[in-house]
Every structure is written in C-alpha cells, then in structure tokens.
Length: 365
Image (cartoon, rainbow, N blue to C red; front, side, top):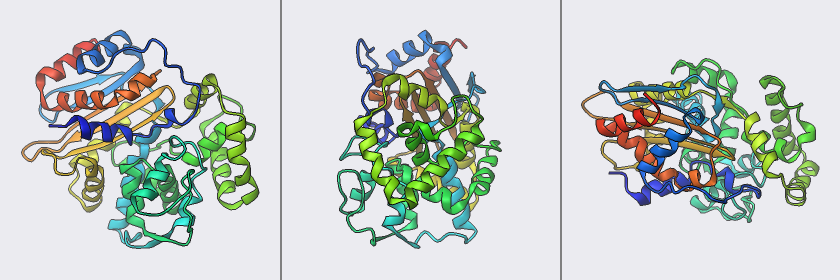
C-alpha cells in the first residue's frame, strides 16, 4: 500500500509554492487527516472541485471536467512527455552534460519553497552540488546529465528544470506531446516568468489580458533574468522588501497557467497506457517517487496559493491502467498539509470500488 511516509514525501514535492511567501492565513482550518474528512470537504464545496477518475475496469467519474483552473506544477507532465519524445527520436541525449549555471539561470532565487529548502535548492543538494540558501550553485561550471533535470523536474518539482526543457524543446514540441492525450493547446508558461510577474507586476499586462499576452510578458522576464545581471540583482530586494499580500497571491494564482481535469487526465492516461518508447520513458520517470510499489504508481502534483492539483495512475499488469485527477480551487494551507491523505484517497478510489463509490457520492454523482 502507499505508506504515509512515502505519501508525505510525494506531497512535499508537489510544488509547495504556497509555503514560500507570507500572507496565507491559517485560522480555523478543518481537520483533513483522514480520507473520510476529505470526502466531507468535497461534499461541502463541490463547485471548487474538478475530478476525472477511470479505474481501468468499468468505473468512471467526471465532475466539472471541463472547467479551466490553475494547474500549477501538475502541468509538468507535458514537459516530461515532450522530453521523452525528443530522447526517443534522438534529438536529446539524457547523458548530455548541462552547465549548472545555465540551469540556475531559470531559477529566480525565490518562488519554489522556503529559503534554504526550495525545490531548486533541494534538486542541487540531491545531486551533491553545493549552493547558497537561495539555491544557486557555488560553482556554475559544474555539469550534470540532462536526464537528471528531467527526473528532478518530477521528483522534487524543480521549476527551473521545466523552464530549461521548455527553452530547449520549444512550444511546438510541448503542444505535440500534450496532443497525444487530446490536449492540443496546453497553457504552458515559464515558471520563472510567472514568479517574476508576481514580484514585478509593473512588467505584466493588466489583469484579465489574453493568455498570449501574459505568457509573452512572463517569457520576456524569464529571458531578462537569465541574461541581465542588473535585473537579477533587483529580485531578492524586491521580493523581501515588498512581499506580496495574501490578496496579491490569490489574484496571481488566478492568472497563472490553466487547464481542465479532463485534459490533464487524458495526458496521464496516455502516458500510463502507451507502449511506445516516449511513453515508457515518461512512465519510468513519473514512477520514481513510488519506485518498487506494486502495482506501479505514477504521480505528479502541484500547488499554488489557493490551488492544489493531483494526478495519479495505477499501472496494473492484467488490465488497463487507472487514472485519477483532482483539481481543487480555493484550497487552503490545511489542504496542502494533508495532500498526502488526498493522494491516498485518489489511489484507493482506483483500486477499491467502495472508495470509488464514496468519492462519487461526495461529489453528488
């Protein structure tokens, strides 16, 4: 079964952006320490939840599947399949040495977890690369295999790895990968650009601007950070001296990349079901967090202030894989704290008809 320790590890790398900045209130939060309490939370806030579940046998659930909501780091399955496709075609080599300074250039110091414990800091530490408290390598000339970036993009939800891969692959490759799951135009942005738009809203378009305009503004800031030392020097003072308020954070989340539960579930299912080389490589990386579990578990989540997303697959040896996606809007710090319990609920729904039925009832089906 999925142990609590392993679930806590997986929840921690879902992309805990909600923890990196001040302002999120923690008063009078509900107890979500059991699956039953998560079901009660869903029942009380059904309009905040989009869910798509298919257990691979006969049970299917679609609850608000086409409502576009922030996807946070869960969208990295698009980057992953695009990378795996390029490797299978010989366009990328997982053994290619990547200069760490080029990887760091997509990391705007903050925005991926607490100082000293952010996701990029964790990624470098995992590789044994000394870095400062902001997650910047002390020796930018170090080299790491490209394949490690793809793995750490999933294992510790490293945003800068996703941005590096997007810059290398191009948006056409990402769109082609997502289209395999019936998702022709994923709203993929530079994570560094979105973070910099939070710190420097004056460089962004007015709220409600078209996605293409917002994406272009974020991409421009990401490129500027990578190339302009004088701009990089402004980031930490701005973020620490003028920290965004809670309303700022929640409004910013609403402007970040969006997608639907149906789109995310379609791509997860394509990866879990596919038998070609790209799907197999993507499956291997998505399964690293629960390596050795039977049946194999594929997982990628994401979180932002006010948003929590989980995508999980069980790859059965004797039947079609099961896929479950939950996209929760208006989430709270308590939701993130107990994301491990939600993941257990989702996985149990794919293996147990009784739990699947309980989830259906909670969502009014």
